[in-house]
Image (tube, rainbow, N blue to C red; front, side):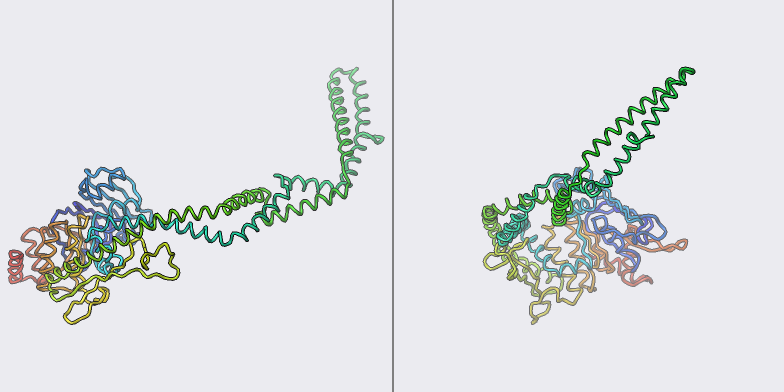
Length: 567
């Protein structure tokens, strides 16, 4: 049950706090005062999408908060427990909507995601507004209502779970069969590729080593001449560096006899001479190893060409070629065992198919029985809502089978979906002599509102939500019909907390609690307020709803009379 609602900086609402109670709560007010904004706030707290456009002009963020009382054994209580919350503390939901679109959600003070919020609030409240009335025209919702009324949700869930266990196996079988159809050509291609890669005997990093060797072979003559010139300059020619250093050493040696401080320099010269002699030796060895073999160069060019072609074909590098070889081996192993795999999958499919088909047929049979009972109850409820001659029925049809439907999704010539083998269409004939037509063809908003109310009343004892909100339940009705609707809402409030936004006094008089929404302009800003009305204020509000802004003694007396006579 919704016990408290707080709204701040939301649309034209500045700062609002409302305490709710059980029973039937009426919310009234002038057109445009902001009644539906309150419903929008509740919708957001239940998990609908937030937008920065909802923030009150001039404010940085909007804040919404609601507290719900939760029964520990309820579905919501169980979901809360699964998420680590204590139902005994109640459910406190807070949403902060910011201009940056980085909105925040808190559940019992803990930061939460929109998915978690939707999960926790799924069975918390039901809001019936114009969009819900239109949603009733959709066949999937009509089928859900039928299953809810018949207590078939558990069986429906079993069908759903079995179906979604079944589908991946069907997809796996399709892929395996498709692979088998292409098996011969696929095996031939894979074996060719494997042979091509294996015969190349690729070594990791081989292409880089060969590229360096090719560079040396292509420039062998230039390298030989350069190294030879360096050896001669260092050692072999008259006036070479080693010869001149030897002369320098001799002169410094003589000078060191005069100045002993030069002895260290002589030793440095010795080290340099030895280093140059070693360098010259290394260059001679390098010179001996320089190859000018044109045949070897051609072999390397040919090998690099083979490697380059394979790289272009299998991913651009030697590593990718080797990875492709590993992938080919795995694919060949899969293909070689494909027939066994298909048999294993088909064995699983057969067992699940038998289970799914039985569940779907059983659900369909139960729906046929339930459809008759629900149709009778709807007709009785509509008769009480001043639609006495209305005929109502539920048309159950099998899902159509197409040429593309997988054989495993067909039973008795009917297609199986996650909801079974049926579609449901609510059929109605509001007037005598008319043929039954789909509910979606009804043009009258008043008739549709009464059908919604009739279904809500019937499902009241099976619906798991504690709070039901009606917005525009009075669309298209008035007068004595409104009083009938009000009485029905009062009856519904015995099973649920009911919040009803209305502009009709004939409905408002049935409320156990009454709030008035009003709009004021102060300091150039419009703000909406909502206040509980006292008994005398309620008389005035009913009088306003009866006669507009000009309230007379007559309308006040009429209002008092209405509040005294609710039956």
